[in-house]
Length: 350
Image 1 (tube, rainbow, N blue to C red):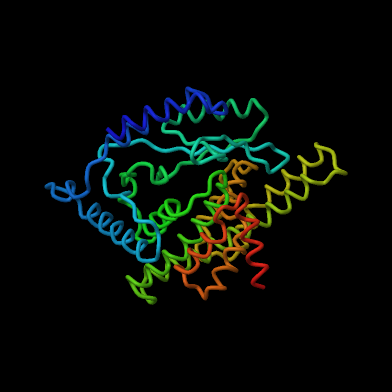
Image 2: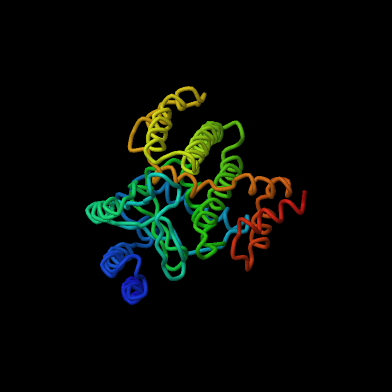
């Protein structure tokens, strides 16, 4: 019944979403209903003959991470208590951006507000939208998404692909989604994703340390991966800054800007090779695999905006993740611009 409700609700909303159109919303509602109808209680799956050890391990880890999230003050939800049995679709995420500015194309939805991406359940639908956006003069970037969230409006299931994830990835993803359910500021996707990324990273480290120990292979590998991700984010941040300087130069013509941006994007593989990663292969491969364009680089900005402000508040509370979460919720309560409110709070404490 909930799946049917989702279909009716979203279809009804399509008449007030001019930026996306009825077709997109109806298709999304159909596949959302399909996903929700595929759910089977995890307790039922556990009791079945032939359930794999891999599945049991993942179900146990997810339940334990959820319990840990509740302990540190994240909202308790009914997400990840069901399994999307026989559901084999890939979820696609599409972003778009002009070639000479970092201003992403956005779409507006009820409840969540303005968002800089669209989600699809079929590659053909995503490709059709991508082609439409290209015709409008935008660059596009299409990637797969491993997890899925309705921000607490429905009971999101464990997807089949998640059963093969490592403990570290499961912990980070589940905690990230619990953060969304705990605090979501309408129309501030960059803030919401950056906050969830920050909490997910730190809380998952605390979780792994508590469960496996600081000397464990699991925890040490997670620390090295985090150090690599920090180097990667700094690399992309520097590239973003250099490109943005080119785009905002009012004394340079468009052709010169395009030549310069092509040269800057071409330096990405060399930057990756000389960054000093613990595991350089995956980052060099990412740097060499195209396309690299503004739409792709904007995804980095969406998930890693003004991290230094979160770091400052986190430090002010001596690394206490519970106090940090409460502080962020208090600082941003009723604020139209959460980043501006966060900056004021940090500067006031200084």
